[in-house]
Length: 306
Image 1 (cartoon, helix red, strand yellow):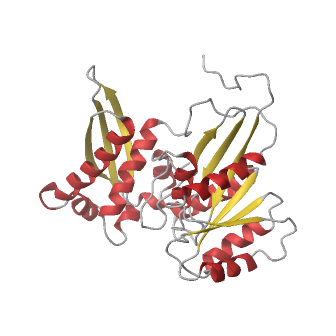
Image 2 (tube, helix red, strand yellow):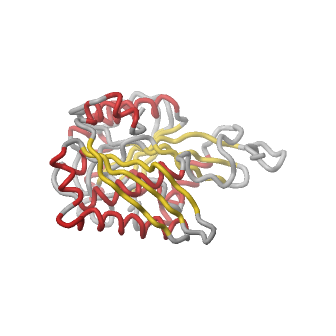
């Protein structure tokens, strides 16, 4: 039987922290850095994260449950509306909020959308200026983002860092968040790093690699799912998955000439899976068409966006 409580009689502290921001500011990278293990997909393309992923960090007496959220943006389809609703749900149910901004650029309209949402929240807030290693004028940019929170009733914390290249600063921020947790039992068992099933996690790894390889708008018309996962006696993990596209024309683009594109996506995903699983992996992929799935609420539900 799994023990969901602390191993001692001492009181435990736990809580949920939402990581929010516009697309492509480094939210998923920050989550993975908080945990020291990859639970959320990352790519240079905006809107890689589509649904709230919970990453779990547990100490002897405290548990932080980070909720990585999709980037807040102006939705163009049912998929976009679903993603924004994921953010709204996360903000309603968490104990604290981390707002991530990109210090390489001044605030945009999407940043202002985020600011309007978090400014009125009666919850602890930390403004995280990310990508300091690539920003020319980080202090000036941070000042502009800070100004978007003027009028907030509650005080807020702030920090500037590189989620990818500042592990000490990420750890310091994590310790600050741990210190502010309310007294609660643990919500997840010790040893858990995410609330995803292994199939969901692997599907996101496949989609990440597809987004890296595909061009223009095609990555946003792609979904992935894992249909079967079996383990042989010799430890080989056999994973069968699908890449879902919206149009027949997209299918050939994902497969590529002579199957080259699909092989490259599969090889890159397999290498990631083998690193994290520490086992050899056979990854079988096929491409299927679900016409207009981003606008089809039932198709979204079948693909796990519900």
